[in-house]
Length: 335
Image (cartoon, rainbow, N blue to C red; front, side):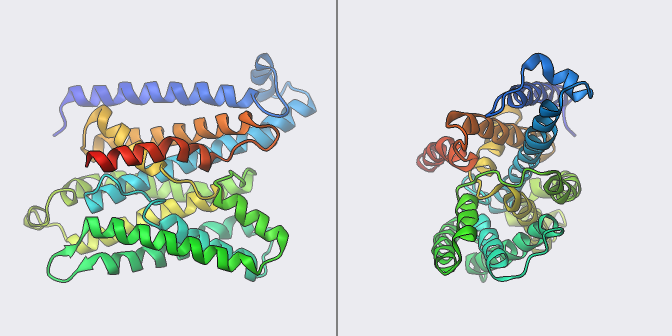
């Protein structure tokens, strides 16, 4: 049973995070190459804006904001699951190769298969999931040791190796492609938020709406899996079955997010840590906070990045790496 004071603290933190998100959305709506006056945002949202104001807000800014929020939440929950499964605070879908697997799947699909423009946005998450799932299964097999089960440290090392290998494979794949398609893949690799139209939101939304509540439902299983195996087995948890289900969930969340946003790393590393520092390690408590933290971090990084250098800006993936890489080194030295 969770103490009422902790539930009260969780609600307070969630309220503060929601305020941060709303404030960042407000700033993001007004900033950009085609700026919109802040006193015109609310009238425009209520249908009283000019054609230019409505076009900038509803066709450019708002879809991008929603995509970054959803993707940040998905990456944060994916990282939380991976850290729980591996009992390793350094686990992150970008670091252990899952994002790279999704990227190779997208690159192969985009470069070598005929693409129907009408269904392109909706097919991307599924294609990314297939690539990421194959990668995750290979990492799992190489990390599993007969007799002692999954080796968390080994999983991180194997994942980093796969990430490097797949990055090399990506270069080989795109080396023979035409220039226009190579430019797209290069932007994807940099973590440039590119899926900024409403169809991409509808493509990403079902994955988030189904899998994040499912993860919250599995929170107690994650608590048990985060302990040692004998304890989990002693309370009746089917370890390998639960690990596989939750691994599929983490892969699906990460793949669906990066298929739309590009190769974003470190959100899945930082958000769970910040959430645990605020509320503690119980998954029922920190998962909602981690989701909101991840959404806010990616939205904040994208808002800053796209306004530093106009008109293209700095990709959100580079901004998160500038923050996340030093944090990763700090954790590595600490642990």
